[in-house]
Structure formats: structure tokens, C-alpha cells
Image (spheres, one colour):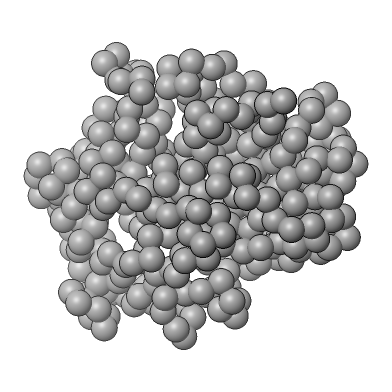
Length: 348
């Protein structure tokens, strides 16, 4: 029987790409989203890509009654839990709002998993749980020292899920710590469309490249890195999406909640990213050097060998593909999901 997976936050950047990969792998998919970080306009585009009308529910997962009704009305075999507030800077300014939203929504999902005997949850965690580790590359056993409420909330949710797995061993849990997803679906139909000014590097680069923002601020060029700019582990969002399929297909042992870094295992500097996107769009991208931001580290990248060893997953797409797919999305959709659907977009 085809397994039915609920994707919370499935209209968002990573969730939507994961929904595409789930359908391609033969799963049934439903999506729950409140569209705070996304747009319901995505579903027409997802139908063009997948040929499916994906069932979707507008729901605030902090509403326990609504969550219960959703699970009661469906036959979910598993949940991939992306939903949550995610802007690091805003989490520092509004910690109570962030903890309340991200913890309560996760607790409500956990309660429904137990009540309705749903067998699997894959949790969308983050490298933000590590803070600024002393050793690079970062392994999963690195001590957790989150530097902001966003990362702190992810670490708390991980602990909730570990405790649930121990108490309810019929529920299989996997905790996926993402590094820095970039790029877009190769069709150009779906991609990253942050509301307001982007918080992350690559959507900011693309907004400058397409003329929506005047220039990119590069925060610091005096780090102990090859070109002085910060180095991070960037991976293609489609590779990241496939990591969730791998986690579904390699279930954890009963009572366990294994952790996996999802990254490429190497770092790219801000200048390397900028030049890759300049090559993809065919012109220079305005930028200036700005002072370092408090709390930023020089270098951060993953050791992703555990995921390769235990999940048979490895990031495959190149930096060039990340930049080309990202530019295709942004150039075809300069206003994100408010742009008209591109008429000539490929469907495979």
C-alpha cells in the first residue's frame, strides 16, 4: 500500500521541493501550511511539475483542535515536519514568539502521532543547533551550543522527539540537521521566495541580480579563510529534499532518534557564491564590504559521512547547478509567486 506522508510547511521552500521528490518516489502527499512563510499560489505550479492535485490544508499547527481534526480525517503513515518560524535575527528580537510557535506546533504534532498511531516523523532541524563549534567539519556528536532562539528551539524540539521515541518505540524518528540549502527545481517553477528582505545569502544575491535590491552587503572580508569572507556549506535544495526520502526509506531502530547532518561536506566562501551567481546570470552583481556581524563565525561546514553510510544519501549537485537553477527560478519569477506562471517552463 502506498504510504501517505503529511508535509507540514509543505508550501515553503524546502517543503515544496520535498513534496515533489516524495511524489516522484511513489508516496502519497498531503500538505499543511498557514502560509506565513509561503504562498498558496504554489499549488498550481506543483500540479504542473507533478501532474497531481496535492491535498492541502490551511492550518495553524499551534491549534491543537485543528491538528487533531486533520489527523482524524486522514490516514497518515508519516510526517515530515518543516513548519516553523525560521528567521534567526527575528528570533533574537522576538524569542517568546519563536519558542511558543515552534515548540507548541511540534508538541501538537507529537500528540497526534501518538494518538493516531502514525509510525514515522522526520524532523527539520538545523546546523544552528551547533552554534560556533570549535572543530570543523562539524560532526553530529559535536556539543550543542545554539547562539540564538531559532537554534535553541530546534535543539529543544530534537529533545522532545528523542524522549517521544524512547517512550513510544513504535514511532520511528529521524532528526535532520540542514546546512545551507540553495538553488531551485530545474523547471524554474518553484524556488525560494522569502517574504520581505531576504535573511539568507543566496536569495539576497538573486534579488540584487534581478534588480529588486541595490547591492549585496558582504559582512566581513578579514576572516581566516582563503579570500577573507565567511565559508559555509551550501547544498542544492533538491539534494536536501532527497535526504528526506532516504530517511523515510531507512527507518531508525525502535526507540532511537538518530541525527544526520545534511550538507556537501565542503565549504564555499561568500565570494565563491557571488561569482558562481554572476556566471549564471551573465553580469556582475553589485556588492560592498560591510563590518562583521556579531556572532558570525569564519568557517562552518558539515561532516555528512553518517548520512552517506547509514542512509545511502550524498549531495550530488554542483555549485554551478545551484547557481544556474537559482537564477533560472529568479529570472523567470522576478516577483516570486506573485509572478505569472512561466508558460515555457519544462515539466520534467
